[in-house]
Length: 500
Image (cartoon, rainbow, N blue to C red):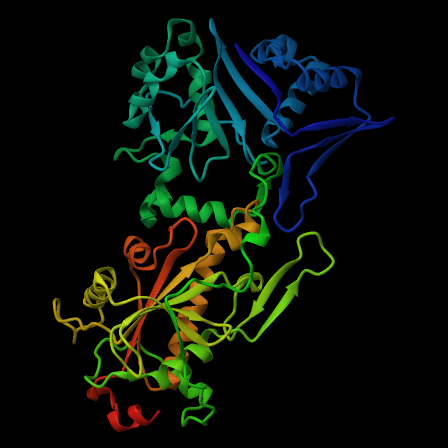
């Protein structure tokens, strides 16, 4: 038995001459929910709307396959309206067996295309991007590209999960269904295809809905992250079920760490460097080989000051309930949140002792957290090994990568972003955008100072946790960058570096 009813979040308001159906869908730009207006609805349509809002309706009522009844104008009108509601993602679809609800389709987007069972021989299977999540009422199946989720409520249907992992023909699928649902196998197949969690296989076993993503080389993790953080249409109803916002007071704009000792950095120099801004942009490049002469505390001070020091604390969105403290730094940050802090693994630096430090961007000082222990040494070795994997680094042979003078680790206070973006699901995506901005800022400043800069594509969250003593759930490493003095082949003047 196949039933329809309005999905959660759909509201029907009737006036004198019209009915307004409010959907649960809105856009990120405009939180006003989308509506469907029906002028002068007939009595039978009003009755249908009432049933869809209450107990639901049975597909058999419409006798879709009965040509005689389909010709009746009133009946055809109801069926057409039902198809409109379905296409707009307003209907929860349920197939029932002898034990009640067995499998359900719950739309998550306002664009649903009903797909029928293919004609002739066919093979279907799950999308390779499918995700199965347990719920109290069954198993929820979805994919990043799906327009609806599928809920298996009847445990007797769980075996079809194994059948659909590989391509499955019509007979195999039908035989996997319980006896009371085999007569509805076409409805079940149609529901799976329409939702987007399964598709029809080609000769190589790739389903039609995956073809473009597979050819492009998308991984399930990247596709899920991309779709989640870049979708324009949102489901307001489901967003409202998320946890309450994080307490902003726990994640202040200015970050203070408990440190063993504080090391004051030299005053930043205000000398006029020889390179103009456009020269810096043109000269910016990655340098992976370092001079034996270490960087100095003075150059490191300039590097940190012109990259990340706090210029001003500001109030963002004043007058709104979500008002929060923001920061202004030389580098951009989404919403001026600046959740990323810098930690320095100082291997060698004239004027500073080796160790693991936190950069206090407000007071322009370094807070020492520990000596250069084993986790720090492993991070330095990992940075050296990572540079050898770069395809353009022909001059750096595997096993010959150098430890940098200073390894900069970027760590994000996730809660600071979540306090503002938890409901949108954009927190981590915005953090990564901030990382990109910081990378470029570090590159440009290092180039202007005559340093050898190198951004790294990989780092270890576990080693950062060990070195910092912080839980990665509260402050997680999200990027690494290393600096030193460029090797002599890059025109480095060791005398100038000591003076700087």
